[in-house]
Every structure is written in structure tokens, then in C-alpha cells.
Image (tube, rainbow, N blue to C red):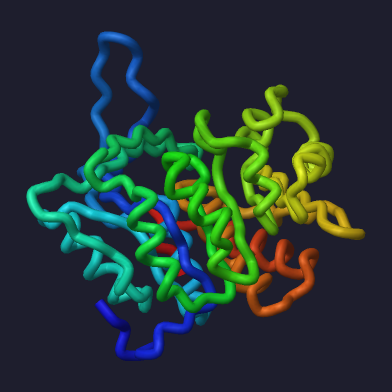
Amino acid sequence: MTDERNPGGAFDVAFIGRANIDLTVHVPHRARPGRTVFGSALTAGPGGKSLNQAIATARRGGRACLVANLGADTWGHQIRAALVDAGVDTRHLTLIPDVTTGAAIIEVTPDGESYITLARSPATELNAHDIRRTVTSLDTQAVVVQLDLPPGPVGEVLQHRPAPLVVGNLVPHTDLDVALLEHLDALVVNEHEAAAILHTAPDDPLAAAGALRRLGIGTVVVTAGSHGAAFAGPGVSGRVPAPAVPVVDTTGAGDAFLGSLVLDLARGMPLAQAVTTAVTVGSQTVQHRGTDAP
């Protein structure tokens, strides 16, 4: 669906990845083996990292689009409607007939931590053909790609470089050639994802950012939850502490961070300033339930 507010289809950021329905329940604690926990009423709303990031960019006034596949079912139509309502362009969103949309089962504990299980829908996974078809008409300043997608579509993005700024997110798929990461302008991961890529235990985020840069990536940002974020780029590195705030729900905070960060980088903001703003956005998000935060 073409956004009437952006008929030409020129975007600040295009997000390539997955969208799903979030099935969220708040629990007093996680269930022990063989036991049952009574939780809150179940809520069902749009989710998925790329979707959350696209909405975060749109909420900051950016022109965002989402490249993803959904099932043409009730959940798929609900997700597309939510994107349109949030101001995200859906012309590159495909609803596939007779296919089920993926779902994330999210448990949120009283400390605000979220425990997520993703029930993927294999039929909605992007493939290399989807990407080749999309990049020929994509007019955007930045692209964010989920690196845990199958190697085919990720490789197409990294080799075709459909934007001046190409950003990777998440731990790369196990079958992805690590040498392709050199095609990234920036990598944004949390401290646990950084450790997984480096095959180490989670440690100092700034040291992890420096180590990831040595893989040939120009700029690396490592988020550390309540401890803020660290960054390392050409001739610049540092830490940004997070403000102390009451935590209600951490779901989607990292996505809000990334959506803000990439929009500012696409608009030419210096790295340190963009990270500082993104930390503020992430801190605002954890003070609200779900990903639907101001």
C-alpha cells in the first residue's frame, strides 16, 4: 500500500526483516517445571523487530518503510493496518494467501524483563528473489537488515547496497559468510548479541564494540540495557549512560533505540549525538507497557 503522505516513495530508512503478532501476558514469575502460573489477560498486537524499528522511526518524524512478508490472515491484516496508522509505508509489505502469520509469545515479569519465544512462519520468510525485486525500486537513505534472516536475502542486501547507509542488526545467521559483514556501514547489537558474535562472555560493551569493528565493520554500537550504550567508529568512541527510570516493560526498547539511531545517522547527525538521543528514546520506552510507547 502506497502512503499518500509520501507518494514518491523516497524514504529515510527502509527496514528489511520480519513482522509478527505479539501475544503478551504479564506474570508474577515464570512458571516452574510442571507448574502453572496465572497471568494477566492476553493481549495481541503487532510486533517483530523490523516492524517495531520502522514505527519508532516514523514516530520521530522519519519516512519509514517495511520490507517483509505476512500471511493474508487476520493477524496479517491487523499488522498492516497498524503500520499504516503509525505512518509506515507498506508498499513493500506482502500478504501471502493461505499462510499463517508468525507470532511471538512474550512473558513480562514484575521487574519489566521480557521473555520472548518466536513462532516463525517459514512461508513468510523473505528470500533472495524478494530482495532483488525490492531493491530495484527502493529509494532510501538507509537500510536496516535483520542479519538472522536466511543468508540468501541478507547476502543480496549486503552485496547490492541499496542505500548510502547499510546497517545490520542481530546475530548473523549461522550460515552467513562472516566476510560479508565488511559490506555493513554499521552494526547495532545488544551486549549479549555482541558476545555471541565474538564467541565470548558478555563483557565491557565498549571493548566489544572495538572488537566487532575489527571484523571490518565501519561503526559498531552495543546497547547495554540500563547501562546505556557504547559506540566505536572511525576516529570516535565512547559510552552513553542511561538515565535512571522506573522500568515497566523492556519489550521493544532496543528497537526504539535503533529506529531513532538510524534515522539520525541517515540525516547526518554525528554518531555520539545520535547514540545519546537513542538512549533517551529507549529509556522512555521501558516506562510503558509493550512497544506502543510515545
